[in-house]
Amino acid sequence: MRTYRIATIPGDGIGKEVVPAGRRVLEAIAAGSTDFGFDFEDFDWGGDYYRKHGVMMPADGLDALRDKDAILFGSAGDPHIPDHVTLWGLRLKICQGFDQYANVRPTRILPGIDAPLKRCGPKDLDWVIVRENSEGEYSGVGGRAHQGHPIEVATDVSMMTRAGVERILRFAFRLAQSRPRKLLTVITKSNAQRHAMVMWDEIALQVSKAFPDVKWDKELVDAATARMVNRPATLDTIVATNLHADILSDLAAALAGSLGIAPTANLDPERRYPSMFEPIHGSAFDIMGKGLANPVGTFWSVVMMLEHLGERSAARQLMDAIERVTANPALHTGDLGGKATTVEVTDAVCAMLASNAAAASQAA
Ligand code: NAD
Ligand code: K
Ligand code: MN
Image 1: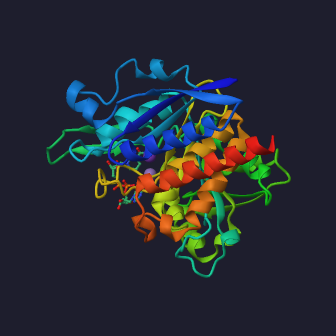
Image 2: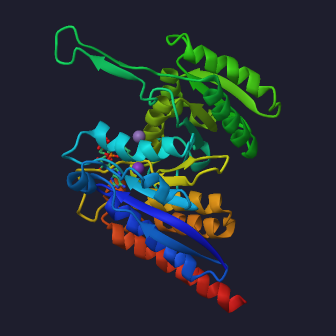
Image 3: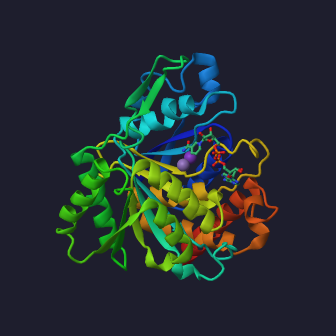
């Protein structure tokens, strides 16, 4: 029997609602499997921890996570602590500390969801956005001088390295190659940003030579937003910088129906460190503590975790349960126009997993 060591970090806001829901789903999967199980450890890091200790996570926090097989994360962001403190003190500390340089964000229109792109069918919107997750606009390079004075200067330097750009482009070409359409769009702003972004374009051309079967094109990020709305079917795999992909993936999620259903994986493709899985949304201050959060983004992130762990059959079963839930409007949360609660959606997914397991053991 395989046992996976999973760290859960709910963090703040609705992270505290959706991560326990994700853990319940993992427990339901384990209950139906004779092959594998999970050993969970929960970490109470985030805004409440900050109020007690003055930091979002302990100084040796990464050591506590290092031997885990995967991390399930909620959100960092507290209404009473500045956003840059919460983000840099927790999520970015883990992503950058474990060199999770590839952030993968699939988007599809799931069955039963009334997406705003009425002209397009589910097959016309099936994207994976690859976000560079270790440097660029989020490199942390920069500073403030003469703070508060009229001559103040502040910079956030978008620092890109040849090695960092090359590894994310190689990852994106490989991912595009693994998908049926073998289509990659490389997104930059290389007309205005004439150093780092021009280097991206050059490296993309070099890397592409190793992937002759991948059809690829380039698009400027502003034009890319319009293309996502007007010609969604011309896109498949997309690769962009840390900031550009962050923005484009919220747009992608909204076009597919809601921010609440979108998942992501923060991967260390070389598997030197644990990878981290989370919904793309944040703490959702407007609905936190009310039991209204859509847990589907977290469940889809759990699917990505199971794929990463090599548990493909369990991943397929969970994705199937998610699609049966979205297909039923009575199980839609408020963000999808429904009235269901986080717990009702979680109960429904767990019940489907349990009935799958019962059917399988009867067949055996
Ligand atoms: P947000 O994603 O928290 O919320 C944006 C809107 O989407 C809100 O109206 C919210 O109610 C809705 N929404 C999001 N997730 C939902 C869900 N699962 N179900 C239903 N509705 C949902 O973005 P924001 O308001 O910009 O950020 C709030 C806080 O979260 C900030 O502190 C921000 O820094 C943080 N944040 C953290 C992460 C992260 O940890 N990865 C990501 C984004 C934002
Ligand atoms: K998140
Ligand atoms: Mn974001």
